Length: 336
Image 1 (cartoon, rainbow, N blue to C red):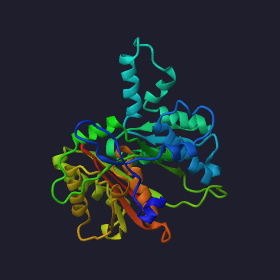
Image 2 (image 1 turned 90 degrees about the vertical axis):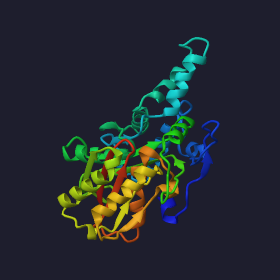
Image 3 (image 1 turned 60 degrees about the horizontal axis):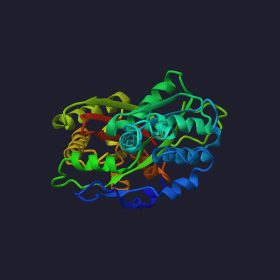
């Protein structure tokens, strides 16, 4: 969260997508990942798994009491490592025979490969799940984890999302985005991993650090993008009513604003409709770290925590919103 606190954007780079030219993007330095993940068995790990291992290692170093066997992992991702999938598929065509592929790379092609390898690496034997919900993945992962804890399937979970910026991802995004249009900022692509330690309300004698936030509620729905603003506004209204929170009490809203013109306009309109005359602080982390797609929602929560740090009272409600081009709308209420 240091980057959010200092308002320092991510490292800028580019990924080649073809004759149209490479779009700008924020990339993680491979040397940084290698410096955080050391030991045997890293040679065949793909970039996405390395990001999850690096992030989880930093989190468990800060929270050593969470590195116990019954800790679980809930990880959000679009479809796993698209780069690993396409590379492995290509090898079946270009190698001498279709079966002349490197079998050690096959686990990287499975959507839950990163979550499984991370659990094995840290010896986490608790619940292990992989969630995919487009731009709403970060919120969906937190919602799923909260449900599992409430129902007694877990006491403590590492929860978050990961996305890599690779040529296939950049190519798809480059050709699928709608025109930004007036009043919508073009957002570069990005990548990254965010993980939170989520656990049941603190019991007496808990060894983990004091909580920095409380998950107070979630709401989701689907609608054609043309009706997305109405659907998201209704979801926000329902969420606030169920939680007993007045829009005027919200101190901040963390917006997705992924760079897709139609979705961004719909999201902004939905928040305006739902909150009326309320004027909370508006956060748009994608301007600093790029559009990390399935990881964006987790970055939005991280931006909230960073903004609240130093003035946290664990009683101020904030909103996280997501509007996907696939018609999925979601929002979460976080008390910091």
